[in-house]
Length: 214
Image 1 (tube, rainbow, N blue to C red):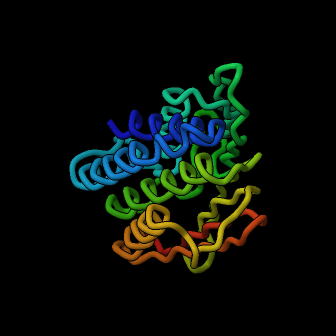
Image 2: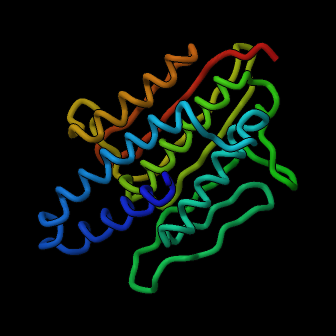
């Protein structure tokens, strides 16, 4: 269900950007979709997630984002090791950003954090990364989004960076603020920390960090 809601939200966002008259007409519909997506996220937090999350949440996130891309018709060149996603956009739609999963390598792709997180933490990482990438695709007007992950002496660092328009977190609208609060709360729930750095015209960097027992 959630991929379809993401796809619908992406289509509405595109229509609102390209047609000023539709923008006002579709504002309430977009709000309904956002609220439905939040309900669906809350349900998924307790009832479902991909089986691959337990082993490699970043690989699972890449697979989910690819699914959203295909269903929404976004034109995204998604790179993950040897895996790439084709161009599925309609001819009259603008190109969407290239998603580079530098956190994944090999065939099949795996990340450096594969097998080192407990299940609740893996699920949280998966959901947070999906939301960060999805937000960047939908709102950032970026040409590239990069997902990076490193194991350090202190634990794990996962970075989602885009070269888009950026935003002022202190002036985010209600929908964006709600989304940021959800992501921050998800990180805190498993004892991790999420820092978001952004400003108008300078892109956005989201850095998720935490410890692991493995």
